[in-house]
Amino acid sequence: MTTRTPDESRPLALVTGVGRTVGIGAGIARRLASSGWDVAFTFWAPYDQRMAWGPEPGAADAIAADLAELGAATAAVEADLSDPDAPTLVLDEVERRLGGVTALVMCHCESVASGLLDTSVESFDRHFAVNARATWLLIREYGRRFTGAPGTGRIVALTSDHTVGNLPYGASKGALDRITLAAAHELSHLGVTANVINPGPVDTGWMSGEIREQAISHTPLGRLGTPQDTAHLVDFLCSPQGQWINGQLLMSNGGLA
Image (cartoon, rainbow, N blue to C red; front, top):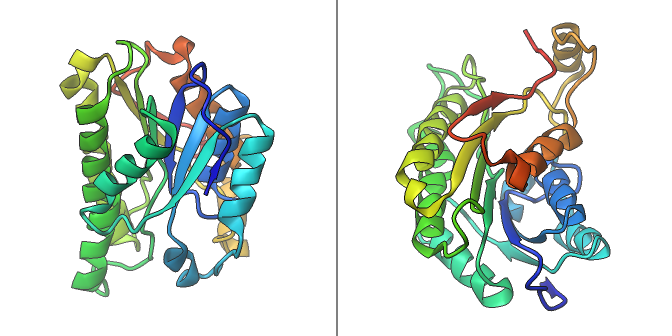
Protein backbone atom coordinates (compact mmCIF):
# COMPACT_ATOMS: atom_id res chain seq x y z
CA MET A 1 0.00 0.00 0.00
CA THR A 2 1.33 3.43 -0.99
CA THR A 3 -0.46 6.76 -0.87
CA ARG A 4 0.37 9.66 -3.20
CA THR A 5 3.70 10.57 -4.79
CA PRO A 6 6.36 11.61 -2.28
CA ASP A 7 7.20 15.32 -1.99
CA GLU A 8 10.95 15.97 -2.21
CA SER A 9 10.59 18.80 0.30
CA ARG A 10 9.45 16.32 2.98
CA PRO A 11 12.08 14.04 4.57
CA LEU A 12 11.24 10.36 4.92
CA ALA A 13 11.02 8.43 8.18
CA LEU A 14 10.87 4.65 8.42
CA VAL A 15 9.03 3.56 11.58
CA THR A 16 9.10 -0.14 12.42
CA GLY A 17 6.54 -2.00 14.51
CA VAL A 18 3.42 -0.04 13.57
CA GLY A 19 0.88 -2.84 13.76
CA ARG A 20 -1.97 -1.35 15.80
CA THR A 21 -3.78 1.97 15.69
CA VAL A 22 -3.36 2.42 19.47
CA GLY A 23 0.33 1.51 19.57
CA ILE A 24 3.34 3.70 20.29
CA GLY A 25 4.58 3.21 16.73
CA ALA A 26 1.35 4.53 15.26
CA GLY A 27 1.47 7.54 17.58
CA ILE A 28 5.01 8.31 16.45
CA ALA A 29 4.11 7.90 12.79
CA ARG A 30 1.20 10.35 13.13
CA ARG A 31 3.32 12.90 15.00
CA LEU A 32 6.08 12.82 12.38
CA ALA A 33 3.53 13.11 9.57
CA SER A 34 2.03 16.18 11.20
CA SER A 35 5.54 17.69 11.47
CA GLY A 36 6.16 17.43 7.76
CA TRP A 37 7.63 13.95 7.31
CA ASP A 38 6.67 11.32 4.80
CA VAL A 39 6.36 8.03 6.66
CA ALA A 40 6.97 4.42 5.69
CA PHE A 41 6.15 1.82 8.32
CA THR A 42 6.40 -1.90 8.94
CA PHE A 43 3.97 -4.25 10.61
CA TRP A 44 3.70 -7.99 11.21
CA ALA A 45 0.15 -9.21 11.77
CA PRO A 46 1.06 -12.74 12.99
CA TYR A 47 2.73 -11.22 16.06
CA ASP A 48 -0.48 -9.49 17.14
CA GLN A 49 -2.47 -12.66 16.45
CA ARG A 50 -0.56 -14.60 19.08
CA MET A 51 -0.56 -11.82 21.70
CA ALA A 52 -3.25 -11.25 24.33
CA TRP A 53 -4.69 -8.18 22.58
CA GLY A 54 -5.26 -10.13 19.35
CA PRO A 55 -5.28 -8.96 15.73
CA GLU A 56 -6.65 -5.64 14.51
CA PRO A 57 -7.90 -6.21 10.97
CA GLY A 58 -7.39 -3.22 8.71
CA ALA A 59 -4.99 -1.46 11.10
CA ALA A 60 -2.31 -0.81 8.47
CA ASP A 61 -4.85 0.71 6.08
CA ALA A 62 -6.31 2.88 8.85
CA ILE A 63 -2.89 4.15 9.92
CA ALA A 64 -1.92 4.87 6.32
CA ALA A 65 -5.15 6.83 5.87
CA ASP A 66 -4.40 8.87 9.00
CA LEU A 67 -0.93 9.72 7.69
CA ALA A 68 -2.27 10.69 4.29
CA GLU A 69 -4.77 13.04 5.93
CA LEU A 70 -1.80 14.71 7.62
CA GLY A 71 -0.19 15.31 4.23
CA ALA A 72 2.31 12.45 4.23
CA ALA A 73 3.17 10.08 1.45
CA THR A 74 3.21 6.70 3.12
CA ALA A 75 4.01 3.07 2.43
CA ALA A 76 3.15 0.09 4.64
CA VAL A 77 5.42 -2.94 4.42
CA GLU A 78 4.57 -6.23 6.14
CA ALA A 79 7.79 -7.74 7.43
CA ASP A 80 8.81 -10.56 9.76
CA LEU A 81 11.87 -9.05 11.39
CA SER A 82 12.91 -12.41 12.83
CA ASP A 83 14.01 -13.18 9.26
CA PRO A 84 17.60 -11.93 8.80
CA ASP A 85 16.80 -10.98 5.19
CA ALA A 86 13.86 -8.77 6.18
CA PRO A 87 15.73 -5.52 6.99
CA THR A 88 17.37 -5.42 3.57
CA LEU A 89 14.09 -6.22 1.84
CA VAL A 90 12.27 -3.52 3.84
CA LEU A 91 14.79 -0.82 2.92
CA ASP A 92 14.72 -1.97 -0.72
CA GLU A 93 10.93 -1.69 -0.80
CA VAL A 94 10.78 1.65 0.99
CA GLU A 95 13.41 3.18 -1.31
CA ARG A 96 11.59 1.86 -4.37
CA ARG A 97 8.29 3.37 -3.30
CA LEU A 98 9.25 6.55 -1.46
CA GLY A 99 13.00 7.19 -1.76
CA GLY A 100 15.87 7.40 0.70
CA VAL A 101 15.27 7.24 4.45
CA THR A 102 16.38 10.18 6.61
CA ALA A 103 15.13 8.94 10.01
CA LEU A 104 15.03 5.33 11.20
CA VAL A 105 12.70 4.93 14.20
CA MET A 106 12.55 1.42 15.63
CA CYS A 107 9.47 0.47 17.64
CA HIS A 108 9.31 -3.20 16.69
CA CYS A 109 9.61 -5.84 19.38
CA GLU A 110 9.06 -9.41 20.45
CA SER A 111 7.62 -9.31 23.97
CA VAL A 112 6.48 -12.52 25.62
CA ALA A 113 6.89 -12.65 29.39
CA SER A 114 8.90 -15.50 30.91
CA GLY A 115 11.58 -15.83 33.55
CA LEU A 116 14.93 -17.48 34.15
CA LEU A 117 13.45 -20.91 34.80
CA ASP A 118 10.68 -21.12 32.20
CA THR A 119 12.06 -19.33 29.12
CA SER A 120 12.44 -21.72 26.19
CA VAL A 121 15.44 -21.63 23.89
CA GLU A 122 13.10 -20.94 20.98
CA SER A 123 11.60 -17.91 22.73
CA PHE A 124 15.01 -16.61 23.80
CA ASP A 125 16.34 -16.86 20.25
CA ARG A 126 13.25 -15.23 18.74
CA HIS A 127 13.51 -12.26 21.14
CA PHE A 128 17.14 -11.69 20.23
CA ALA A 129 16.42 -12.14 16.53
CA VAL A 130 13.73 -9.43 16.56
CA ASN A 131 14.86 -7.03 19.26
CA ALA A 132 18.64 -7.16 18.84
CA ARG A 133 19.62 -8.69 15.51
CA ALA A 134 16.98 -6.91 13.44
CA THR A 135 17.93 -3.62 15.10
CA TRP A 136 21.56 -4.13 14.10
CA LEU A 137 20.64 -5.14 10.54
CA LEU A 138 18.26 -2.20 10.09
CA ILE A 139 20.92 0.23 11.32
CA ARG A 140 23.51 -1.43 9.10
CA GLU A 141 21.33 -1.10 6.00
CA TYR A 142 20.42 2.47 6.89
CA GLY A 143 24.08 3.39 7.36
CA ARG A 144 25.13 1.78 4.09
CA ARG A 145 22.45 3.66 2.15
CA PHE A 146 22.26 7.06 3.85
CA THR A 147 23.04 9.90 1.45
CA GLY A 148 21.46 12.83 3.25
CA ALA A 149 23.25 16.01 4.24
CA PRO A 150 25.49 15.65 7.33
CA GLY A 151 23.51 16.50 10.44
CA THR A 152 20.13 15.45 9.06
CA GLY A 153 20.18 11.70 9.70
CA ARG A 154 18.45 10.27 12.76
CA ILE A 155 18.25 6.89 14.45
CA VAL A 156 15.90 6.38 17.40
CA ALA A 157 15.08 3.09 19.12
CA LEU A 158 12.63 2.26 21.90
CA THR A 159 13.84 0.17 24.82
CA SER A 160 12.74 -1.12 28.21
CA ASP A 161 14.37 -1.83 31.57
CA HIS A 162 11.93 -4.65 32.37
CA THR A 163 13.93 -7.76 33.30
CA VAL A 164 12.48 -9.62 36.30
CA GLY A 165 9.99 -12.17 35.01
CA ASN A 166 10.67 -11.02 31.47
CA LEU A 167 14.15 -12.38 30.78
CA PRO A 168 14.30 -12.64 26.98
CA TYR A 169 12.58 -9.30 26.41
CA GLY A 170 14.68 -7.35 28.90
CA ALA A 171 17.97 -8.98 27.91
CA SER A 172 17.40 -8.44 24.20
CA LYS A 173 16.37 -4.82 24.79
CA GLY A 174 19.63 -4.32 26.68
CA ALA A 175 21.46 -5.52 23.59
CA LEU A 176 19.37 -3.14 21.47
CA ASP A 177 20.59 -0.23 23.65
CA ARG A 178 24.26 -1.01 23.03
CA ILE A 179 23.78 -1.58 19.30
CA THR A 180 21.91 1.68 18.80
CA LEU A 181 24.24 3.82 20.91
CA ALA A 182 27.24 2.46 19.01
CA ALA A 183 25.77 4.06 15.89
CA ALA A 184 26.23 7.54 17.38
CA HIS A 185 29.99 7.02 17.01
CA GLU A 186 30.32 4.50 14.18
CA LEU A 187 28.07 6.55 11.88
CA SER A 188 29.56 9.90 12.88
CA HIS A 189 31.14 10.21 9.44
CA LEU A 190 27.59 10.44 8.06
CA GLY A 191 26.50 13.10 10.54
CA VAL A 192 23.79 10.80 11.89
CA THR A 193 22.61 10.97 15.51
CA ALA A 194 21.46 7.88 17.41
CA ASN A 195 19.49 7.77 20.65
CA VAL A 196 17.45 5.31 22.67
CA ILE A 197 14.21 6.13 24.51
CA ASN A 198 12.82 4.23 27.47
CA PRO A 199 9.16 5.33 27.56
CA GLY A 200 8.26 3.50 30.76
CA PRO A 201 4.92 1.73 31.06
CA VAL A 202 2.51 2.75 28.31
CA ASP A 203 -0.80 0.91 28.30
CA THR A 204 -1.63 -0.01 24.73
CA GLY A 205 -3.81 -2.95 25.71
CA TRP A 206 -1.43 -5.26 27.54
CA MET A 207 -1.82 -4.07 31.14
CA SER A 208 -3.88 -5.76 33.83
CA GLY A 209 -5.72 -3.61 36.34
CA GLU A 210 -3.09 -4.46 38.96
CA ILE A 211 -0.22 -3.37 36.72
CA ARG A 212 -2.00 -0.13 35.87
CA GLU A 213 -2.57 0.75 39.52
CA GLN A 214 1.00 -0.10 40.48
CA ALA A 215 2.51 1.96 37.65
CA ILE A 216 0.32 4.97 38.43
CA SER A 217 1.13 4.82 42.13
CA HIS A 218 4.87 4.89 41.39
CA THR A 219 4.68 7.81 38.96
CA PRO A 220 4.85 11.33 40.46
CA LEU A 221 2.50 12.74 37.83
CA GLY A 222 -0.12 10.16 38.78
CA ARG A 223 -0.84 8.80 35.34
CA LEU A 224 0.46 6.36 32.75
CA GLY A 225 2.45 7.36 29.75
CA THR A 226 0.71 7.65 26.39
CA PRO A 227 1.93 6.99 22.84
CA GLN A 228 1.78 10.76 22.32
CA ASP A 229 4.28 11.35 25.16
CA THR A 230 6.85 9.20 23.36
CA ALA A 231 5.91 10.61 19.97
CA HIS A 232 6.64 14.18 21.02
CA LEU A 233 10.14 13.22 22.15
CA VAL A 234 10.86 11.29 18.95
CA ASP A 235 9.60 14.25 16.93
CA PHE A 236 11.99 16.57 18.76
CA LEU A 237 14.97 14.24 18.37
CA CYS A 238 14.26 14.01 14.63
CA SER A 239 14.00 17.78 14.26
CA PRO A 240 16.93 20.14 13.55
CA GLN A 241 16.58 21.40 17.11
CA GLY A 242 17.22 17.90 18.47
CA GLN A 243 20.54 17.42 16.70
CA TRP A 244 22.77 18.07 19.74
CA ILE A 245 21.24 15.17 21.68
CA ASN A 246 23.27 12.18 20.57
CA GLY A 247 24.36 8.82 21.97
CA GLN A 248 21.90 9.01 24.86
CA LEU A 249 19.56 6.59 26.61
CA LEU A 250 16.69 8.88 27.58
CA MET A 251 14.20 8.07 30.34
CA SER A 252 10.85 9.52 29.32
CA ASN A 253 8.58 8.04 31.96
CA GLY A 254 7.07 10.85 34.03
CA GLY A 255 9.52 10.24 36.87
CA LEU A 256 8.59 6.59 37.45
CA ALA A 257 10.48 5.35 40.51
